[in-house]
Length: 365
Image (cartoon, rainbow, N blue to C red):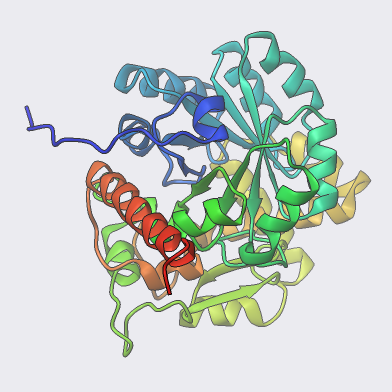
C-alpha cells in the first residue's frame, strides 16, 4: 500500500481527447526500456505508454500486451517499425489483442489502420518531415508523432522548434505529439504554444525508477556536472552507427563506431547473429538482402548495432556500449518515480503557461 498524493487536474488537448488519457505525455516505444512495467506506470500516471516490440517475438509481444492489461486499465499502445523483420507479425498480434493505439514508423501502415479502425483503435504515425506526414495521413493516421533533430535515436534533420509549427500549420486538423527536446514542464508548455497537442519524453521517462534502463546509464544521464556529467552537448548524431541517422550518448565507443560505416561482410555477419538472438529465421533475412539491397543493408546495419545498444541499455556497460539519448539529457538531473515526474511536469507546465500569458496580457503602462 502506498499513499496517493493529490493529483493535478486533467489537461485537455486533442491528443488527450483522442487517446482518452489525462495528461498530454507519451512514453515512446524504446527497445529494452519501454516494457510492460514502464508502459503501465506511465499510463497509470495519466500519460500514454507505448510498448517497444522491436526485440520481441510474436509470443513475447502477446504476453507483454496481456501483462500491461493486468497492470493498468488505462490507454496504452504498441510501437512497430515496419522496416524491421518481425514487425508486421507483431502488428497483427496487437490487432488481434485490440490494442487501443498502434504507433507505426518507417513504412506504409494503411492495412494496419484499416483493421485498427474496425475496433475503434487509433493510429499514431511517427514522421520527420511534411512529405512523410502527408503519406501517413493518406494511409489512415489519426495523429502524428513529429520527431525533431534533438531526439534520441532516429530524429529528423529539422529541429522541433521549426518542425512543430510548420507541420501543424500545414495539417491543422491532425493532432500532433512532439518528440525531441522535451523533458520538463517548460518544454511541454513550449510544445503546446508551437502547435503540438502532447509531447513524447523518451529520454526523460527512461531515467525514472520504474525504467529497466541499466542503473549505471541512468546515473550517467542524470549527472548534470559540466565536467564529466551529461549535458545537452554530450551527444553524437550520425548514420554510421546503425545505417539510419541517429543520436547517441557521446562515449569512446560511440565516437569510434560513428567515424566510418562497418564493412559489408561484418554487417551481414553481425545482422545474422542479431537475427539468431531475436529468433528471426534466416530465410526471412536473406531474400531481402538480395532483392532490396539498400533497404536490407540498412536493416542489417541496424541489426548489427543491436549488440552495442544492448551492452549499454541492458548491461550498463558505458565503455563498450552505445546508448540512444536526446539532447534533452541536459534537462535531466534526477531519477524520480514516474508518477512524481508526471505531476511535477504538469504543475510546471501550468505555471510556465500562466507566466507566458502574463507576459503578453495587456497591462496599464
